[in-house]
Amino acid sequence: MNGYIFIKQKQLNWALNKGINLQNKDKNMNGTFYTQKLEDNLYEQLLPETRNSFLNASGGELNQCEDTPCKLQALHSSAALVINIFQY
Image (cartoon, rainbow, N blue to C red; front, top):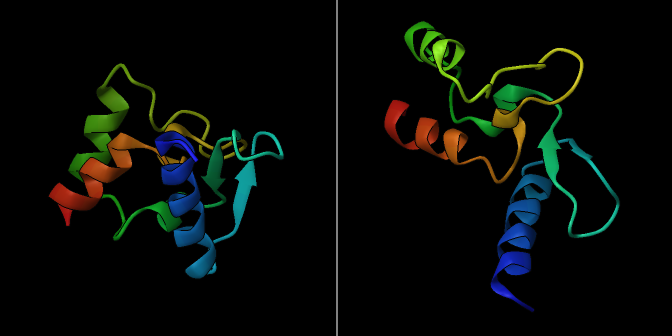
């Protein structure tokens, strides 16, 4: 197993062990898994100033959070990792 697949499997196992419902772009391990709710991918809710920073940034991490998953809902999101480390 290569490192990429290994890490994705670890992320998937983490979510499943926590009972987090996921969405998958496709049905194989190369798929991108998203939490159904943004809050499930974060240790705590976004602070208003953090949310505003992401809304004003060019990355679009919060775009489409109502109808389809936004980037922050991806298990592999580096932005979610930063929020979980620095906001926490």
